[in-house]
Every structure is written in C-alpha cells, then in structure tokens.
Length: 603
Image 1 (tube, rainbow, N blue to C red):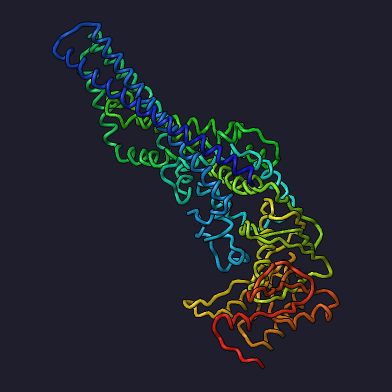
Image 2 (tube, helix red, strand yellow):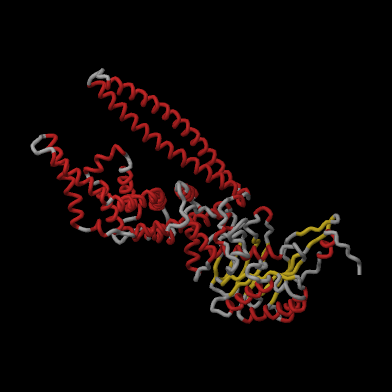
C-alpha cells in the first residue's frame, strides 16, 4: 500500500507541475494573440485608408494566419491543461483512497441501494461508507451500472469468475491505462444519467436521406451552381441571373426543411462531446496490449462484421460531427448555401447510422465493462498483499485465513475460519460490541469480492459458488406499516425458499428473531437452523442466546460453536475481536447498563 501511495504522490506532483507550466504558456500565447490582433487591426486600417500595396496585403494575410494558428494552439493548450488537472485530481483521490479517506467521495452509488436485495444492503455494498464508494472509478453511466451489476449478481459458474479474475489481475498492473481511461471519461462536460437516448439516436434513421434520387440531386445541384457562378461571374459566358436563381433554389431547399435539419443537428450537438470521449476511451483500449482471454473477447466485441474496429467507425462519425459544427460559423454561410452543406452532412450521417448505428450499444457496453473491471483492479494494485481467491467445485466449503473487512482498513482485525461438510453451520456467540456482526459482514463482503473476480482482504479464501443470502439489518417501515420483526420474517422466508432451490445457499443471520420473547426466539432459531441444514444450507449465525450452543452436541458437530469475548482493564471494557472456538463465557450487558447510569442491584 505504501508503494502505491508513493507512486500516486509522485504522479500528482508531476501533473500538478505540468499543469502550472501549461497555464503559464497559455497566458503567454494569449498575450501574443492579443498583440497579433492589435497589429492586424492597425494594418487593416492602413489598407482601408488606401495606404500600402501588395506587401501590406501579404502582411495582413500572414498576420491573420498567425492569429488563427494561435487560436488553435491556445485551444490545444487549454485541453491539455484541463487533462493534466484531471490526472492530478485522479492521483489525489487515489491517495485519499489509500489513506482511508475514501468515505468522503461524492459518488456513493445511492441509487443502487435496495433494502430488499439478497445481500447488498446488509453488507454495505452501496451507499455511504460502502464498497461501491470505496472502489468505484467508473465515470460513465455504463461503467457505474456495470460495476453495480457485478457487485449485485452472482455468476452462474466459476469459469466466468476465473475469466474475469484473469482480466482484473492484468488490469491491476496497468495503472497508467486505468488512469487514462478514467481521465478520458471525466472529460465529458455534460454527464448523462444513462446512454439510452444516445443509443436510440444512433439507431434512428431517416429513410429520406437514403433515397437514391435525393442523393443524386444533392451531389449534382451544387456542382451545377458552382459551375454557373464561375461561368456567369468569372467568364461572363452566361447570364448572371442563372446562378442567382440556382442559389435562391438552394436557399429555399434549406429554409423549407429547416425544422427537420435543425432537429437533426441539435441531437448531434447534444451528443458530440460523448461521441468524442467514447472514441478516445475505445482508442486507448484498442491500442493497449492485453493477454487475458476476457479482455481479448471484449476487444473483438467492438468490431463490426467486416472486422472494422469501433475506433475507425467512431473516427468517421467524429469527422461528420466536425463538418456539422462548421455550419455554426457565420463566415461559413456562403459555402453552406452553395454546397448544400447541411444535406451533404445529413446524407453522410444517416449512411453512418445505417452501417454502424446498431453497434453503438455494444461499444458503450464494452466501455462500461472496462470501467467496472478497472474499479475492481485498483484493489489488487493498492493492496498487493491481498490474496486472489479460489472458487472450488466442491459444495459447502469456506476456508479463510487471516481475512479482514476491506472497508475498515487499519482498524480491521483479521480472523480465520474453516467451514466444511458436515459442519456446515457456525454459531457465533459473544457479548455486545464484541465483533459478531462485523465478522459476518467480513465473510460476506469478501465473498462478494471473490465472486466479482477481485482480490480479497486476507491471506487466503477458498469457497464454493453459492447463493448468498443475508438477514442482518432490518428496521421498521412506518410507511408500509411493517414492524422490524415482520420484516425479518419476510427475509427469513426468502432465505428458506432459496434454500429449497437447486443452488446451495450461503446464509448470514445476525441475531435472528430478536423482536420476540426469549422462548420463542430460542425455539424458532433452533428449528430454522435445522431446516436450513436439511436443505443443504451453509452459513454463519450470530446470537446472544447462549443456550443455542447446545446444538453442536445435539447435532453431533453439524453446528459448530465460535465466540468473541471481552476483557476488563483499569475499570474499562476492551475487545480483541479475535474469533475463538466454543461458546462465549462472558457477558457485558450489565456492565454497559451501569456505564449508562442504570443502577443495578446485586442479586
């Protein structure tokens, strides 16, 4: 972690210096541009006063050329300056992540929070202080959605996990690629909530511009008009009224169809920024060198049937967009009229849509996949000591060694546990605040990382591919009129039904049936665990009910007892958060009540 932090600090310092230097050059260029403009005006005044000859005209044209070049050069410097600032911010954010300040990141993925999901709500996958907030480096809506999907859905087979794991491992070593991908994404000036409208626009065609006779007219008429202008005004071999009539006809063609033309071009203006950014992101991917089969398959997905890659097709679209943008320049108006420029652009645009428009959705999907994989890859880069998990074909296996909670960072305490058939259920007892719930979440969130193909926060994790189900964080729903106990029953019912399916269920139950009396709670918990075991379930259960510890004996080891304990020093309570074998032998509720000011009489 310290190695990656030093690299981030070095990169941040480098990009910060370069951006400052670039800004100074921009200011110098701006000053030269201003001086050039003043000189241009002075020379133009002399010419207007009919002072000077061909040399002054040549000087004026030269100064104009220099001025236009300086504008272009300044725009390039401005783009570079913005890009360097983005790279500086990316590395600054990476330092915050390594130092544990990631919980200040604005993108928390709150729109993905679902209290009824099988596990994401209980395991803090989305929302404030969540896994998404910690690892997300996706900027586009496609990337964010894809990352959310990976964290919310369990793959159907281990081959999918291993294939993704191979890609993530390769990307974890490509810091520069990941940062450039993110930087290009962050150059989008107006960030869309989703790309559905862009995809629909790319697919939508206007058959009018695809008709042969329209294409013939649009190509031939400007040639006739230009020829007539040369013949009439250059050589005076035809009447000057003829080219005038032709120009009027072309003006009317643009005017009568102006609503449709403006509508078409407004959509282009709307998506021009995104089109350029996606082209640059895919260009980075296309030029990169990759070995993993998953990434090579992704690269094949951005090619059309002729084998042309997305960057070639998007470059063509970018050229069309640049042509369309020229019409905004008032100096371009005469050319626009004479050449039927709007129609020429629309014919090329709809030709492109016909050839490549249907592929845009797939291209954006590839961009999203790359962003999601890059987000997961940063864990391996920032934490080289984290292990690559093993997914086994065996049922009922969870073997972890020194595994810790990835979101607790320096405060995390590692523990090891081994769950194998026939001992498929682990019962964890312990005092309040001893670490029972945190341990359940530690196992759960690391399994989510394992299934995503990422590294896990620990030395080793070997587990089966299972249907992850949790019941940990249940609250009253006043709007729905649902009590926390009834809400818990609904979650338990979902887990039981899932255990009756074909997939093996891995469950995490935290203080089940806590909303009822001790007798019913004890009986209900015992019956539930027997039922889940019978249905081939495997899982961990935390409880204050020490009497449930008898299940290890009565089930002949099908249920194993573990516990956390506290100790007292200098009149204060302390926890080591280390998992130990057996049932808890300590209680701290009375002590905590006394600390709260409750007078407890000795019995």
